[in-house]
Length: 156
Image (cartoon, helix red, strand yellow):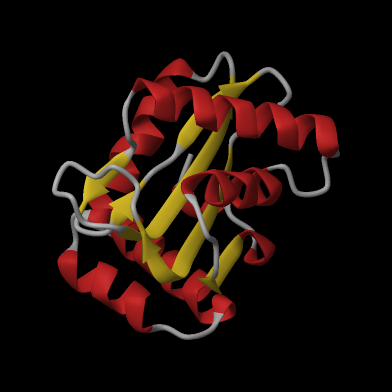
């Protein structure tokens, strides 16, 4: 499973504006639960919050990977958000985050979950790529950039 398989253009947002970590997690849950109803969105939100209570999913360098498991999901889904204003996310380096890839997975996705997190960490470890993500203005271009990274990564 590849990261781009988890995204749709509708789950990629450039310039999102939120006022708090809770509002950000609500936005991510809405994107991850797209079209699946309020119960699914709420379950995803609860799983994201539960994971954050264990420790911040911020990696440092302005990047975070909020993720959670939910019995409401039948397949893994992803959402990417670039914030208009960085937000404190409890990162180990103290920097606020502006790039987030949220991941929602079914309860039974133990190994797949870890593989996806590994791919995300590799993607966000590419400083040139994260800079490109910060420079793109439109959501559609962000989606294309993420798709290109995945295509290049898969070919390598």
